[in-house]
Amino acid sequence: MTSPGGLYAIILALRILSVLANGSLVMQMESEYNAIRVEDNILYFTHPKGKASVFLGLTSPGNTYPIQWKEGMNCTDSKGACLRIDQDEHCYRITWTTQFLSELKDCLTLDGHWYGGGEQISQPWPIEKVPRTETAYVTADMLQNRELWYGGVSEAYWISSQGIALKVAEETPLFLSLPDKDGDGKADLLCLRAARELPYQPSPHLPLTLSYSLCSGDNVKEVHERTYPKFFRFPKGIPDLRMFSDPIWSTWAEYKENVDEQRVRDLASGILRSGFNNSQIEIDDNWETCYGDLTFNPGKFQDPKRLIEELRDKGFRVTLWIHPFVNEECQSFAEGDKQGYFIKDEMGITQITSWWQGSRAGLIDFSNPEAVSWWTQKLLDLQESTGVDSFKFDAGETSWMPKSYVLRNTDQCFWPNVYSKKFVGGLTKFGRMIETRVGRGTQEYPVFVRMLDKDSVWSEENGLRTLVPSLLHFGVMGYPFVLPDMIGGNSYDQQPSEELFLRWAQANALMPAMQFSILPWRYGVESSYWGMKFW
Image (cartoon, rainbow, N blue to C red; front, side, top):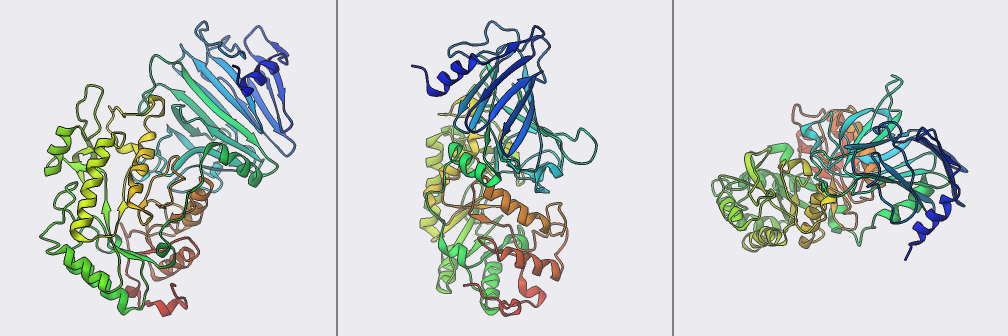
């Protein structure tokens, strides 16, 4: 049976004006919402309030642009690429397929202003303010490669002031660039390239595909409201209410890895003495005996259960920093390796990765339900033995995966980004008090999503000026429960000045949640100083 979209495409095939002998296309399609015209291998997308143009087939050799419309037809007889365009309500889906070419590439002109896409170090708003060189469009820890990588909250979805939305299909092995063609310092194009290159692993037995949708509305708000529900889900609830109303207190920016039982007590005492409210105290990096064993280091935490009981008696909840790695020297590594719980290659051999706290580690395979059960049970046991309330989950980006990998129970065309989706899905059993820093098709989960670590500077280079654009970006991508990073930044290279700290807090106070770590009373600042109360 022919689908409605396919039938419409067949009918519209009769409206092709001509296919020129040199291979360039001339055709036109119209709907009640918008129209597409293809001429000289440029696609013109127009609607009553806006327009966009797409340069088609930029990597294909000449004379290889046949256009095919009927369902069931494929590209096996063509030495080039086949183009199919289907209309669906206010959207057109453009799909290139090829059996022979190694890559496919189209570039969309950035008419008007564009928003969305990936989390960035400078978080430009709109995105054309900062050109970008080509990179694999996967979730990544952008702190490890600030110029090239996007962050962990990244969707292949963009909207424009022209009332146009662009959504690239998840099965496209996408490499993204925003080139500046005229040298004015701003991006002119948004280029989409599909290729059989790492970190993607598309099946060599299937055609290479570049597929994306162009949608329209009267303005940026309308096109977003029309288009977003076609591709994403809405949150099924809201996170823990106390995390909205009272600030989170983390040990990280203040103590870094030098956290121990006494410093946690000192932090709690300072909070109470200075008159601040609290949602919870989060014990961050370096509380474990070994990274991945998920047991308290007795040299630092002599009696964690008693510590947590004391904090609860004072009105605090307690969370722990958790990551998905198990360092090779840890006791848990041998067990996880033997049971097959780490990411493996196609030969079934555990693949070693590295991360910021380990040069050799296994990465929990969140596509393996048994591995998820093993790892989450260790966390449940930790909660049972110590009374810890919940967890802050770090990492989860695909950039931490080994180069050679196999993901189970998932279609290969969705690798590697499906790892981040599985990661977040595997954490939700711990309830609505958790936080994560990745988002890729996980909007439905009612949990806080944290901005990646900010630097203690004013500038657009990951400083205070990126706070509001980052918040807006998360919202457009469908993640409204934003946990901004530490107030004042992470003080990696320098401590924030008093003015920077106060301005940061003022901006953060208008956002969904607040998180302190650099101690406010270090500046002589107590809760009454700001003339505000954290309810």
